[in-house]
Length: 316
Image 1 (cartoon, rainbow, N blue to C red):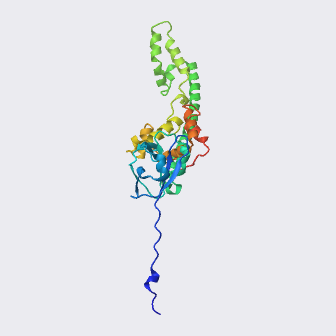
Image 2: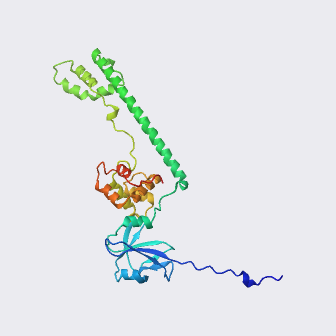
Image 3: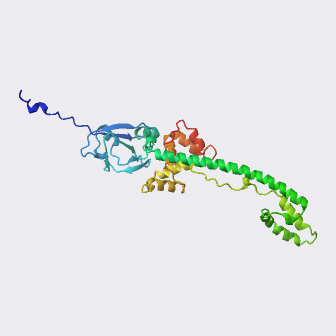
């Protein structure tokens, strides 16, 4: 048999893929956005707003006051109609007329811009292990501190009993070296009483009174436990810090430097910062407003507020 003609083996050309992207536009305040699919892009992947056609061009009109949403900085910026957008297939561009109060903005952002800084656990195993080790170390340190506090309290009781014995003996020379620094505190009182010359036993009484006065307990001393971010921080400060991190003025810095500048030098921990940002971004506008309105009160604490959220993502 003769071989088949070569024309039988010519592969059909695959249909050209359609290059398009999506534009979300708010034209009027308190009015739902309009969504357009842009297909006619002569200079792909570069596109300009002035190249818009059809209904989108009618909504734009002749205005030049258009603002573009930057997901990276979670903020709007005014752009010209000739601004060049580098687009990709199925990407989303959010635009609005300048000054328009966008309806359902938070919900629309969550719909078209899903969380991009959330790292799956299987891709962040080293970070997860580090976070667990740090948490375990902190819990052990807290247990040791509570045990030490109990021991200090028992020491205070024993010392008070010894003080009573010294008062009954009324012999100042028998004070131990461990107690003599406490006698040194009352030297000024003894000098003042020496000016009266009325009672020779005044120094002894002063010493006894100083011994009978309660010493500083360990519970009155400042603790050395370090409060880690975001413990003790209020929602109004957290929201202000996250917005400052995402502001254009800090765009030139990396994430660590932006965090330290926004939160007054708090130590940067990748897993903790990522988790708290995810909680903040998952909250609705009403939930964020409720936390901010609470101010710097107990109800306005970040730890209290995030427990009340309907959706509270776990570790990243």
